[in-house]
Each structure stands twice: as structure tokens, then as C-alpha cells.
Image 1 (cartoon, each protein chain N blue to C red):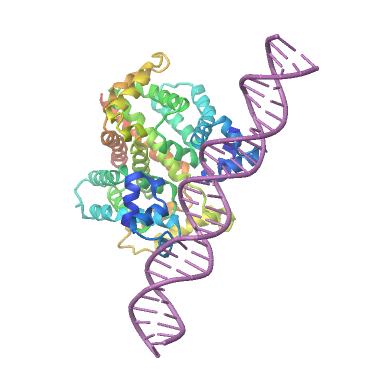
Image 2: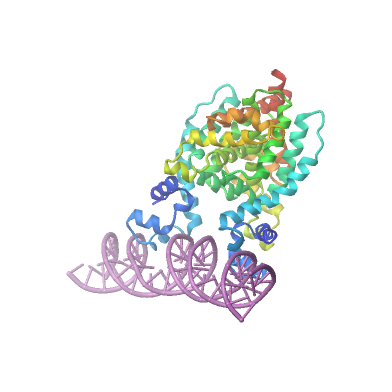
Length: 213
Length: 213
DNA sequence: TCGAAGACTAGAACATTGTTCGGTGCATGG
DNA sequence: CCATGCACCGAACAATGTTCTAGTCTTCGA
């Protein structure tokens, strides 16, 4: 059942996960699903936890290196890769205060790397929060659902970006110098690059903080 | 009408904004709203833009100082303060690829401060993206709707945090050394502090990047 | 083998919500 | 006086989450 739910979510997003659609996919009735979950909230929760399991496994398998920051980076990249393709997952994380076991474990694992930096407890707490906030936030932001036009195949991603850049360039250069400045970068930009660049800023800040103590 | 919509959203979150509730508040009929907006999407869009206007004004009024990073910091703090109290706004930003005029202008303003750092266009683009991703992501994450218990007044924020920390401490210390390490910081922590700490990591990374070039 | 208890399935029925559509005043201009 | 267009209203429809009740299948003890 969870596989079916995740499949629906992955294929067409959060709004596509309806009890009727899921029941149809499973070849059963609507009511049957309620035997396993108490409602839609729990269904989403379980689906999220379900997707997190393989990721957690991968992160746990990842060997520690001498550089804690490199390990944090690797973990963050894996998390990003998982969430980027699943906007519903990012949305779920941002909406739900209740932390599931798998997510908590992930938090802990990154935290253990941070501990090796020998910061104060407060700094460590803030560091892990910053990394997770950035990963989830950026993944949600960048991994946005392709617009209808792109789904229709009317325009591909490149022309879509190009058109946006075009709109930026059409703005008055005096009023929008920055957008003109970076419009060339926007075209053909890669989400993963953008994410890594931001992550590296945080990590650089962390390294500096660790060096001072 | 937008005032009414924003009021509903602020009071009880995104799910509270229904056409019937809004119509009741305005003392009108359900259908009337459709005379002004094409649907719920546009209603939310307009509401978001509506809230952004005063913020944009404040950011524009903010005088530039000699330190670009200080200016970026100040802008980010203002944006955070606006979004933190409005999870629906954060959610909207994360869901919507279409950038409204006010949001674009905000992006531009922060970008202009970044330009003074004299990074490459690519670095500048990534820097602004990182700041916005972090602000929105963290605001969405931290500004989560209080749980039902807290709304009921059954527990206040402090005891809620305390209970979570208690749960962390109940975990095996050998399996969760990090959570034990920071559980004390979690109790009574301030969201704004947490945000500023993360933001300062990014800014430190930026300063370093600017110094190298 | 029978029967009953429990695990599981199925779908009808209900409340809520977004949205559509035809209709109602009402001011203004001819 | 009437027609036209604007602003507004609310009944009706479709989709969806949820509940409820009845049905089926499995299992296990007497």
C-alpha cells in the first residue's frame, strides 16, 4: 500500500494522492485503506517514513572520513537528492512538527559529525538546524513541480529558463541591475550546483567557527 | 477582500481560508468572490503579494551601510520576521514557481547588496539563492503551527519543548549521543536566535568568499 | 465438521470544499 | 421606459476525506 501511495505521490504530486485513486491502483475499495491508516495524515506520514528508510540506510553505510565537514556535506547531498525529486516530501517536512523515527535518526547522524568539530552545544545545535533547514528549504524551492507547459511538452526546461531570463532582461536595467547581472547564470543553471554552492557557504562558516574555538 | 483573506490565513492557517468562510466574514455570498479572483490559486497569490508590500517598503527604506553583509543580514531578518508568523506564506513561496512583482523586487534588492561584494555573477546568483532558500526554508520549518495541545492551552511552549527534550534524553545515550549533547539547548531555545545563527554561517562563508577574490 | 471470532474488504452515504451558472438588483445612458 | 453592463448572490455540481455498515475470508477450538 505504501508503495502505491509513494508511486502516486512521485508521479503526480501530493494532490494526486486521493483515497479513491489509491484504492483504484490497488484494485480495492476506498474503505479498505482505513483499515491500515487512520486518515490521510497518517498515510502521508507513513509514506514519508517509507521513503526515508533507504536514505537513512545509505547515510548510515557512509564511512566516516577524517574531515567531519566532508561527511556532513555528503549526508546533506544524499538528503537533498532524495527530497529534490519529491516536493511532497519537502512539504511534509515543513508542515509537520512531529518527527518520525527515521528523520530523527538522520538528524542524529549529522549531529554526530558536527560534534567532532568540538563546538559548544549551542553552536552544534544551531549548525545541524541550519543544515537541515537549508537542505529542506532549498529542495522544496528548487524541486518545484514542472509547470503545466513543461508537462505538456510545449516547452522544455531550457526554454523555460530562457524565457524567464528574457523577462528579467526586459526590465529596466537601472531598476534591476542585479537581475541583469545574473540573468546569464540563470539560463541553463543546475539545481544541484546551486544547492551545493549554498551548502558550501554554510560549511565554510562552520569551518571558520570551528577553527576559532 | 484581501484584508479579510489575510486575516483568516493569519488566524487559523491556510486550511481556514475557504470561500465560504471568507464570504461570511465579508458579509457577502460565495459567488461574489469569483468576480474579483479567478479561483483559490489567485486568491492566495494576491494575499501573498498583499502581505509582501509593507515588507518591501521597509526593506527599500532601509539605508545602505558600508558593509554589504550587514545590509543583507538586515534584509534577511526582516523577511524572516514577516514569514515566520505566517506559515502559509512560506508554504506559498515554496510551492509557487511564478514570482510576483514584490517578491522579485525583494530578490533584486538583496542582490544589489551582494553585487557590492564583487563576486562573479555565478557566485552572486548562488549567494542570493542561498539566502532566500535558507530564510524561507527555516521560516517554514521553525514557524510551524502550534500543535492542538498548545492551542488548547493544555501545555505552553516551554513545557512542549521540555517534553520533547525529555523524549530525547530517554533514548539510549550510546545510540543518540548528539541528541543528548544538545537536548539542553533545545529547551527554551528561541527561533530567532536559531535563525540568526544559521544566517551568520552563510554570511561568514560569503565574507570569506568575497575576501578571496 | 461446525461455528464463532477476528482480520480484512467493499462500497454506500455524508460533510466539506472549490467551482460553475443562472439569476437579481441597480445605476447609467439613450 | 428600457437596455446594457457591473457587482453580487446562492443554489447546484463534482471531487474528496471520512464514517458506517454489511459482507467475505481465515483460523482455530470443540
